[in-house]
Length: 211
Image (cartoon, rainbow, N blue to C red; front, side, top):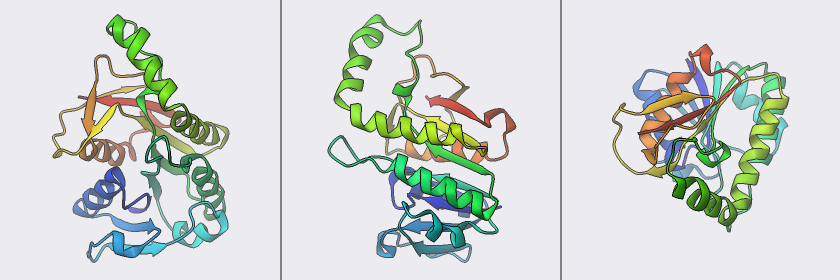
């Protein structure tokens, strides 16, 4: 498969690039600075672009089979990028006639599962949502843009992300949060995102993922 990856220098995006290459895919990695992705592979093409300029992205999407995005806020003090970038990516995908896109979002966009602990449902999660209000607003904007498009989109909503090796031992729930799912590695999220490219059950759906 020939794919374009946005956010390729981030924790999840970098894992997507590496795992896609290991699986034999051709990868175009879109970055702001090439030096931030010190990776050499015959199947890799690294390009620089403004991810909020849709027309400039068209050449990097033309002829591709799918798009994967690891774009997201770096914290509550960073400006939202996911919403603006996704609007540009959707524009470019329409122009390049690419239909499939898989993105990363966040678990708090789901309602808390009813059988999770009361402390989590009524204290911890609401507090996190207040503290990171801008982050989740940006991700909600991203998902709204995808839902309003006619693309074949999937949004993965993980809980706390960790730097840990790929295990493949994660749980996945289409359309809902994973019950009692507290964390997951970036490597496992990337693995699930790549696997979803050929999974019709995830099309036009948010997907919960966790250990």
